[in-house]
Image (cartoon, rainbow, N blue to C red):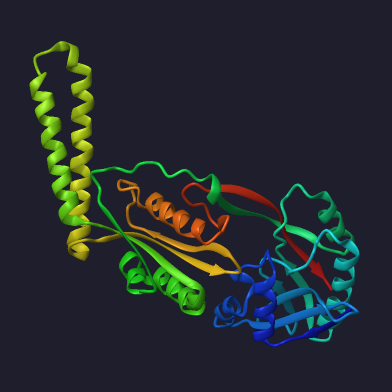
Length: 330
């Protein structure tokens, strides 16, 4: 096996061909981290026939302000077959030798391997890696996702775009700056799915529903047999009025047809990955995250994508515990 540094163009091309690669293992993500003061290194390992058998992007961070030593961090781990221990061991040995010459004293990786894989755990342990933290990934199986009906009183307009004004509308301060930075670095592979409420139609529908429910209550007001049902209808009216008031609140800050939520996704290597979510509907009154996920599933099913994933929970997702974050002193 031969190990060497490569340029970002070659690395991205090789990474995009890997079935398990993510946007977090590309130069677009490293650029985001480099802007925060880190350095980046791109490594390829080839077998004796010249075929690539392992890749890694390493983010180099100083261990302390006064230290001359660095930690090499591989976001989402190496692009390698972790189940092939001889391959992993040879790659690790060559990598350690190479990194020592660059004043690197520690490696940190995040293998995207499910937690119930003792063989990988043993292989990592035998090569000097020690678990330092738990990790999970959240996933949604698009083929198994069932789109259920939404509140017919709430009329939502969906939009997919690259309009960063939406980020400023739905967040502020450090949060907005962070999300704008992320989007700026991955924009060639990113889309914002945004949901806004159709003010006129929603208000009209809510008013009409309240009127119809009120007529039904009044019609049976004197019939004790309807007492329980009428109480439920009164509660329904209160909920509708709360939604009406919430919509007016959003309109006050944004104007007509206000944005309520948005999800930024990356589209890389046949993967749909949620990078961040924005939602000002704190009480989940309008259930807009579900509506956005409905749209994502429809769009990406057509593209043949099987899974939506994220580092944090989202509507319809299930947690997938991974074997964890590991570090190795060298």
